[in-house]
Length: 588
Image (cartoon, rainbow, N blue to C red; front, side, top):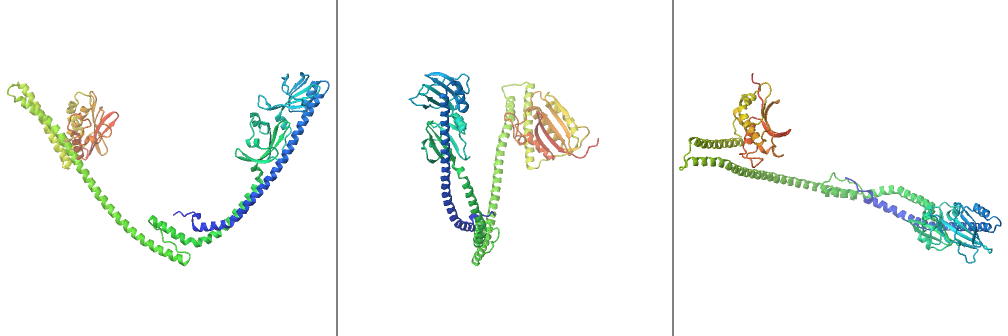
């Protein structure tokens, strides 16, 4: 019997409760410590993120100031304007296109990717020396900044800048767990380490867009909780975001917590075994009683329960064993008596069923017999009466040859009735087991040669083939009975075979018997009826004339000789075969 799990047993629950009582305070203290430490750790992480954001903001502002200063020097440089533009582009890798105007007319232009740069649209100014235009994106989706500088002399400089290149030259985070990116006034990415988001023009999370500049906040995006700081970039009209996943920030603290939990579980495992053994000594007798009760519920107690534990528990187990033994003895007696009654009822039921089936089968056989014999006797009697009345008619005088023809028909029908009555008598004797034969040693091949002319006449001009084995055989048989079997089988082959189809009679020698085979090219009987064709009055085709006794009598004759008979389909032929057991060899 499969034992219950330790947790479902009483000693297991006792031990677990004791362990829980000792560990729950420790777990509570650990949870409170974890809460306080995690908040402190996140506070320190927030300060670190704020510091990094302030540093990056200062670097970005300084870079933008440097960019404006270099472009201002190029704008104020005297002499060759084109040389001044190339000088500025060499110092500023983020520059894509520069264009110098004076009095609204282009004076010089430079492009990093175009030989003949397209003119830049003038930025709208309202008496401002420095104007930052709206962010635009090139054909690849990369964001580009527009900057315009103006001097009182009427000289202007428009610059087109690549924001990601500006960012890459600037950003170098000190903490690998942090992530920083730059967004425009509409919340779309201007620069980030994730270039796919930049090129697609993706927007920052909604929580970042709603947050105000300057404070640390937490938000959840795509199932990940993050700690972030937002700083305003006034020159670009955008915002700088520095953030880090909370899980990465708390990873060192999580490892410490894991070590603490593993230590608590180890302490619980060490203290569990002695507690369980103590509880087991107290609860084992109760466990034994429960096991015995379950066995009794299923109907059998495999063995007497073991008495152990305190004296009171041992006395209870012994009383339970006595009760179980008495119940088992009573149950066995009841089962034996119930089985005896079931056997008696089954025996009587089977006897009644067999008797009923025999009675029903006898009634059906009687009905079939009366219907068939009435039909078979009515036809010849009607012919005999009809032709006899015709001969005796007083108002007609018949010629001698006509009268002889009528008398021949009457004689033929009388013979038919005679054969039918003899067949019925043979069939009745066979069913009663008193069918008599007079077997004498004969060579079946000689018997076939004797009746070959008659069989050929029965074939009625169809191809007829007779195959006999070499040598002589000696088989005890009733020649007249076997002759009637062969004639009946050939008549059936002619009756059911197609016109012009071959009829064959074959004789084979087997180890312990000889086998006769009569075959034709007819369609045979439907599958499943091969055995029923040998039943009395059975006809596979109800439209075929006949008494249905021929094959039944053939089986009676063959079985009276100790042989067997059957019907098979073989290579497109319908074959009826029967065997006769052999005797000694006949002298040649």
